Length: 251
Image (cartoon, rainbow, N blue to C red; front, side, top):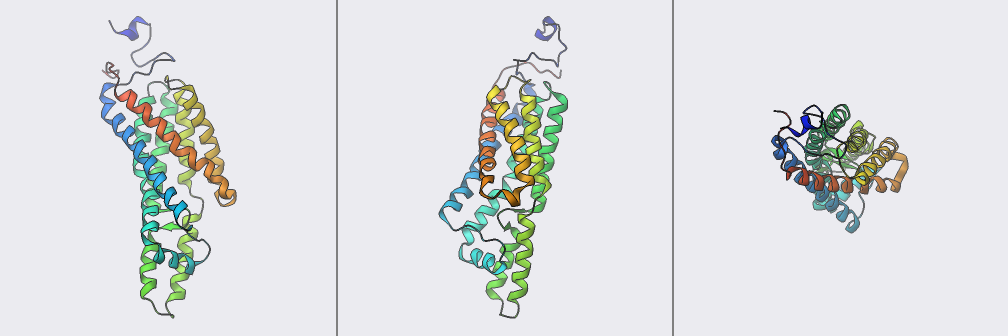
C-alpha cells in the first residue's frame, strides 16, 4: 500500500522531514549536481587569476585596452568563466526548483523561474564586472593595429562598453531573489536547516549587494564568496537526492 495513503496524505504531499523525489527527475538532479560543482570551479579560476595578475582597470578606455593587450589570456579566461558560469547555474536552478516542487510548489516555481531567467539575461548581456565584456577583446585587437588618429575613438568605445559591463543589471538581483526563494522552500523539503538559513541570508545580502554594487566596493566579496559555497552544498544535496531510491510521485 502506498505510504502516502497510509499516512493520510495525498500522493504529492510530504512530511516536513521527507525529501523523496520523483525517480524520473534523477537525470536532471545529477546534471544539476555536476553543474553546481562546475559553477564553483568557474568562480574560483578567475578569482585565482585576479589574485595573481593586476586588476582590470575601470574608467579609462586606453588603460583597459592596454591591459587586455598585455594580459589577453587572463582577461579572456576571466570573461569566459564569469559569463560562462551562467550555463551551469541555469541547470542548477532548474534541478533544484524541480526537486523542491512537491514540498513548496509556489516558492519553488518562483525561485526556479527567477534563477533561470536571471542566467538567460546574464548570457544575453555577455559581460560582467569588473570591466569584462566580449566587445572589449575585439576592440583591443583593433587597437593594436590602429593609428593615432583612430585610437581615441576606440578608447571612447572601450570606456562605454566597460561602463555597460560595470553597471547594475537585473540579472544579479534576480539571482539573489532566486536563491532566497529556493532556500525558503528548502525548509519544507527536509534539506539541512543550516543550508536553508545560509541561503536565505545570502539571498537577502545579495539583493542589497547587487542593487548597490557600484557603491559597496570590496565589500561585495562577502556575497561573491557566499555564492560558490551555496552552490557547492546545493550540489552535494542534489547528488544525495539523485541517488535515493523512491517511487515516482507523479504516477
